[in-house]
Length: 208
Image 1 (tube, rainbow, N blue to C red):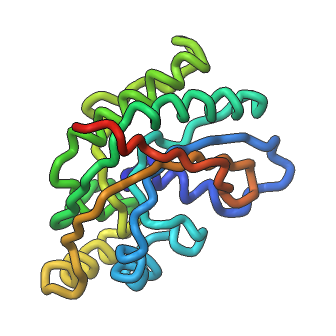
Image 2: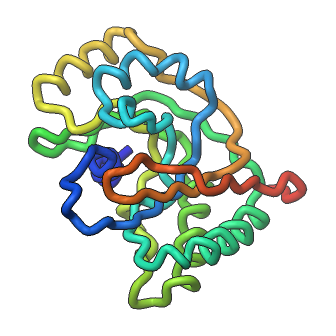
């Protein structure tokens, strides 16, 4: 994923226990197992999220401070409404791209048709706004939201050059097609792993 998901994986590391716990949530689309099998090796070496046992995924909603943990049931209810209004989403990943930032470069697989995922992101953001209100909600990211699947994160320029060479010479499979049938809500407390709260199935009775 993006620099936002870099923030996600960094928080997974053990923090100063004296720091007041910060509750966060994130909503992601877990990729199918064939992608894990094809990309575990590259993620093991280049993505800190692998060691934190974060699965390969496409972010729907970037990690966001939760505030009051009592809101989790409200988030769950809102996400059930969203998932019930969305049909399963065909996804094709093809080729790779780079988000460049000095010493923190990100390499990702590109989503060929972003529109259905952008629409889902928008629906999720609007539903969360109803939970949090206009002032506290983390709003729709507009042009800043680019669905993708991260395979390398927080890379130095040297690591980036090495990984680019491996990808450009055919060292890894870069094309995948699959259908996403659900998204997942994760919640995290400072110094603890991310935990699955609930997965929300899309509605197969809805036609695109």
